[in-house]
Image 1 (spheres, rainbow, N blue to C red):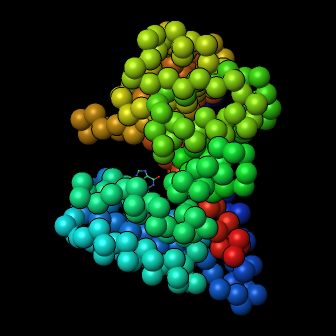
Image 2: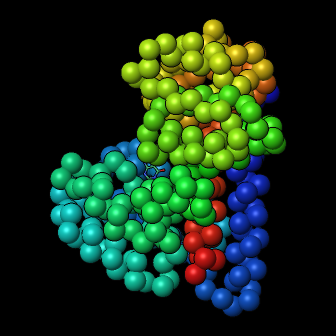
Image 3: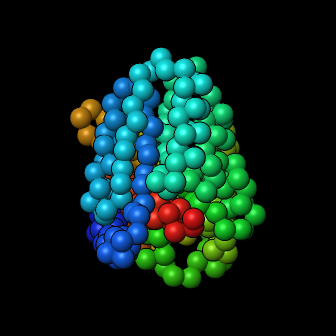
Length: 278
Ligand code: GUN
């Protein structure tokens, strides 16, 4: 089965739109999302544009705040402080990667954890790791929603996550632990990647290496979630060799059209949650 992330994300967006329409009709303020974009890295420009377009479609007030790549760190920090203090702003997102002279750590720490729609602030990271209420990073949250569409009860399943990033691998592991999975994180220094992947009932690939995962790495009837977005020539491919793997598994996400649309849907979901939380 090929998991239709576009369809799933559309269902979530419809729910969000309904809820925001109801908020609007009772004459309350609507959620607001401020996105900060620094420099002109083309993929970031595309992601940010898509985030804004989707926000507007569901009724979220969305603004993009653009800075040239040589903007000072202080100017961005000051802007984040202004957004923290602005009650019309429910969510703040600073698109990554940042130019080298700007500290990711300082920027992420400056965002009010209650407005941190990415869930990257250490307060949210810590709350998630502790099993408390937290804003959960959009991509792993989207992956979990897709996995749970296929399999409601994940208790005792062996989940293998390929990649250990703060954006994907680590929060994905926390979410699957909460679902009572046995979780293994593998990465570039793992001794036998293939052997570890072969144990996976659920495999989440988030390394950014085109078609790394082959058919003989995969357990039959497993669920495979591909977070990779890799440009090969003029095509976008995932971290999994989709054509090789698709007939062996219970379910797999395609690239594009799998996890990508879910990331945006979860951003809208997080923005609405931040709005309601206040
Ligand atoms: N760059 C790539 N993915 C993301 C994301 O989910 N959030 C932010 N802020 N930047 C990104």
